[in-house]
Image (cartoon, rainbow, N blue to C red; front, side, top):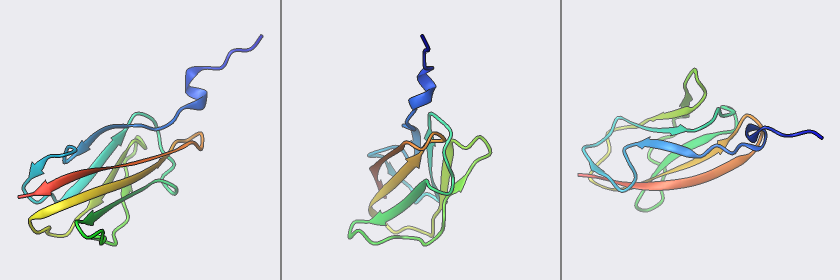
Length: 105
């Protein structure tokens, strides 16, 4: 009888974000999302859109050395509502996605 470790079918789930979901903040220079497992950088994505759904930057997110944190550099954001959208592809190929909103003062 064989047993599979729990990590075999892992999905990457969000562990934390900067800014935090639903936070009202001074204009951030980056959006950073950290996951609970390693990601495939070429397949994982992070974008930020304004209240009209328009992308605020064409920059590509960077993946840290531990392959758990995506960081997206932002231009100077004006006051208003924004949404960060992420797609995380775990090293085993499983895909999760989500979003969170934040407000710039």
